[in-house]
Length: 108
Ligand code: FES
Image (tube, rainbow, N blue to C red; front, side, top):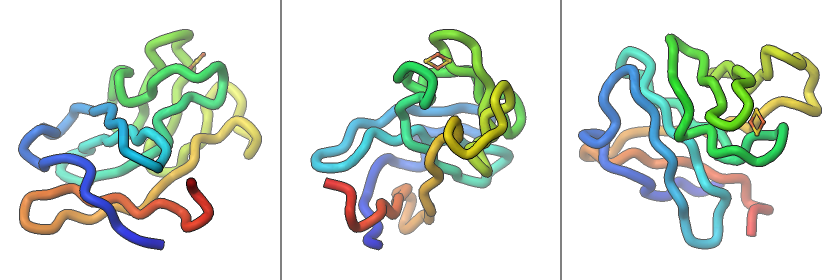
């Protein structure tokens, strides 16, 4: 697992989210929950909506396409809380004001 730079911390205010496309990796949805940076796969498991363009409320994001809610800490889908409908979570860290995300090694 290798961390990659994905965004600047200053572009992700507390209470907001961000959708980021990355070369050779899945798009990532970033969330700032009271200063804690969290990341999910940007592709909604329901039908592919961009979760990073949704509405963040506390630690829940509402998908912009059909309104399903996901816990941004666990990826759990609140409408269908089964593993098949969960969004993948990625580890994050911040280095010198840059948000970094670790993607699984098998990711193309
Ligand atoms: S694509 Fe996200 S709720 Fe349908």
